[in-house]
Length: 111
Image 1 (cartoon, rainbow, N blue to C red):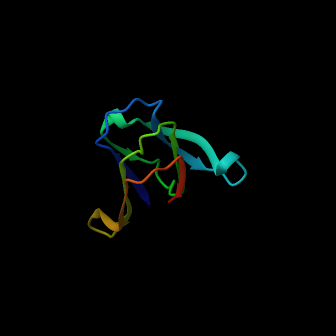
Image 2 (image 1 turned 90 degrees about the horizontal axis):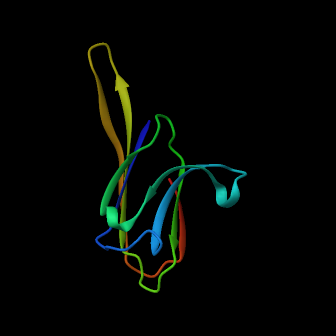
């Protein structure tokens, strides 16, 4: 299974205003977060993150230190590679989208 996450924002704000971090899921870690995999700042506008193969549970943490609500989109896609005797191809299994424009101070999403 291959998980791809897309984070996007139309805001031009510094990382200190708000940002996302994508962490490995850790049952016993603080806030169930393990090793940090990626960081997203709103000035990046859009970023696609392909997670390591077979890592399909992560924590997406939003940290906001601003009175202006963050505006962002989170999309993810999970693919399973199935092979037969002739070809191997990616088959889209799950696709989802979340759009948020309301005030958030911290959010955690388990995928």
